[in-house]
Image (tube, rainbow, N blue to C red; front, side, top):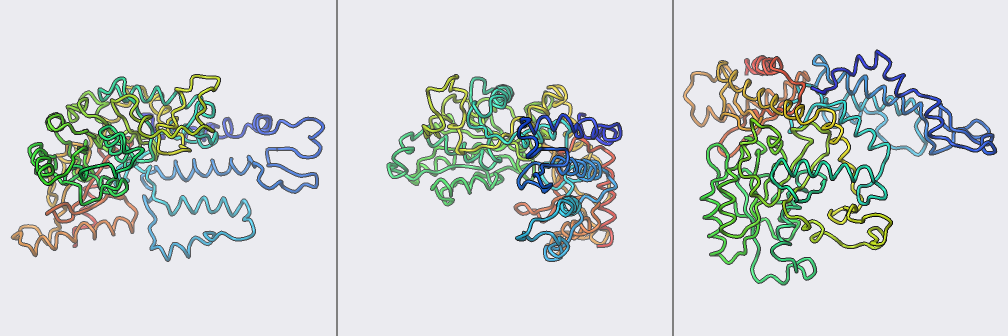
Length: 538
């Protein structure tokens, strides 16, 4: 695995000195002054100085940046990834405010030493999401290649709307888009990086509405003769509600589709809901299916759902933000059988693929629809008489103007691992989920809710005081308090982090998610032992 495991050795072997402390090279790169001006001011390895020796406000101080990088590598990476390091150093909000003495912005500037100390405080009191025992969210871990790409991106500080200001990154986007479109059978389609999976689902809904009613773009929703409605499963992501509200559809006009015991959308129920909506005078246009639901990790049956959508002439969007990366694995892509029949998909490489936040994408098989739906033809930015092929200016496909460059960290990750490495790491996460679920079934006090499909493993811990009793309503009410109590204990000691939640009729249970490639089967064993240690006396 191309992880950060070698960072410590790299620092000890002089990586910091060799890469980050090239004083003369940096001086030449940052300060190209003429001989006549050199006596007035100069950029040195210690920063920029005036004639009188004072610092020039706003000028780059390379020594400060070197110190920050050293802190990040030593504390934010080497330290954070150590299993003996606390995953979190938790304090209540008001107490943390008092502890962070430099939190307030003051009129006078802070010294560099104070800023560096604040960097150390930020790392100490932040959650160590790169730690192999952080299981709380649908992201985690760190890879040296992708972090390097993120650092380069930040240093260059460009925007991804035109080729003229982001030439290399524009070409990289095309390469990444082509590759990811191919994995899901959308060859010849189109894609765009978006700020998170929720925005990807909003894009899907907006593009679907434009495709069916293109005049809405200019005339607005006032031209519609019937109210529009959308469909999503009762386990679908809440972003569908937010998108419906934002687009003026209204959350009351979302038809919830029942799921089976595994959390999968039932195609026959979708068909029933569509017919019901039509009978009530609605105009259906959009169905949101899910590849890897947030809690249970369920994959909706896309093949059957696509047939229902085809029958009614509806746009099928797949929220694959979490589980879409299974498409890269030969072993597990069967979970997404039928994805090629969908119209669009959301995919978050910052989740199962290991890229840093944020790295999200909207993909569609329909070439040109992103441009047609979102373009505003700003003449100051998207001039058609530029000295290059303006089809490389992708900014008008996006709802944003300025767009952060998210491609390089993903390109570096993929280039550094290759297709085989990406597939191996994703298979590793699925393997861990199967290992954990099997171990839970054999361990007293643990009850698996269902066999995992994605890398979500959901289970209850039943303390000795509740074992062997009749499972009455009172018993379940007591069990509902177990997971929150154990979670509070693990946050106080910082040993690991794992989420919990209720779901439908199921009382609070642990939702274990695997997304860190450095996590091992030993960590799974530790998780079981630690939960039992924290909960056995409840």
